[in-house]
Each structure stands twice: as structure tokens, then as C-alpha cells.
Image 1 (cartoon, rainbow, N blue to C red):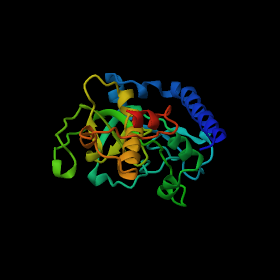
Image 2 (cartoon, rainbow, N blue to C red):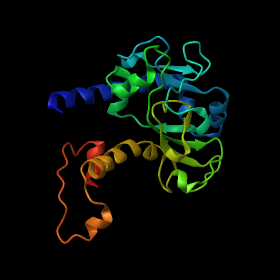
Image 3 (spheres, one colour):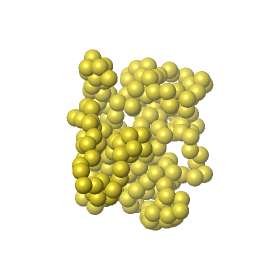
Length: 236
């Protein structure tokens, strides 16, 4: 990525933050984690949405719409996951990354494939933290290490749809929020950390931590753009 492109990305991310800060006061209670908001989540869930028939292309196209709005589809969480194999989580924090900005601008191929040519309503967002609205049974063979109870704080990821009061997520993509972590820390962890892991281990072929600890000589990795989210986790 050139320095000019990098600066443009930072400007776009700042614009997205300013846009959300400008719009959030209209429904600020939806971002709180108190008991009143827990009732709000269940009674009138809403989501940051690119409305039906509105093309990607501008951050200002995002609108905070109720799920039953005629400008939102009947199922606004447009993902590859069916409702049959998901659980519902009431969000208390969501992550904001370059990928989310690129999605809204129409630069992210995966989002264009998910949305298709019909221009259905689309909810961006990949990572989140919140509390469970239903129990989750543990099944290690299916990637669910332990059971989780309704009301427990969790963090996880979806293939789009996390910018919403209520997120439908595959249970194997959820984990209990670690003790001492805030919702914001949980929501900001997964995309950056898993991208760093995937790049180093799966793509780069770096040995695992245990194997590295047994080496007589250090394992050297050069991390470009190490001051960003992925770069910081790669350096860890």
C-alpha cells in the first residue's frame, strides 16, 4: 500500500467515526449496556443499514433503521449464515476497520457478492461484543468448547451484519468475553488478531509458538505497517 493510499484510508476511517458520532445521539440508548437498553434490544432492534435499492459508494448512505422499516429488508442481516444454525446476541460494542469502510464504499468484493444485484438492504460490520439472548450448548467437535448461558457476555464475528442491536451468529464463532476485558476490547480483537495469525501461520508458514520456543536460534519475521491493528498483533 502506498503512502498516499494509506493516508486516504485513514481519512476515510476518520470520516466513518465522525459520521457515527454524528448519528449515534439519535439512538444513543442502543449503545449502552444497562437494563433499559436490554429491553430496548428486544422490543425494537435496529441496525446501521445501507437501505434497499441504495448502492454502495458513500458513508452517508448508512441509516439507522428499525428491522421493520420498509427501507430495510425482512431479514436485514445479509450473511451466508441461515437463521437455523445461529444464536442471537445483543450487541454492546462493534469493531470499525478499513474493511468496514471499504464495504460501504463498494470496494470490498465479498460484500458485493453477498449483496448481489438486487440491492437488498445490507448491514455492514464483522466483529462485535455483547450478551447472549439464548443458551448455547457446548460441542467441542463442532468448535464450541464450552456451554454458554443466556445473559453471558461474549465476543464474536459474522460475515457482515454486526452493526445492529441484535446479531445472528454461528455459535462456533462466539467465545466468552475474557475476565477483565471490556466490550470494546472484545469487539476490537478478532479481525485484527485473526488476520495476523492467518498471515503468519497459514500463509507465511511460521511455526507455532511451542515449536518456536524449542528452537535454538530465534525465528525472524519482518512486519510491514506494524503500527496498525494487524501489525501490532503480528508483532505480539
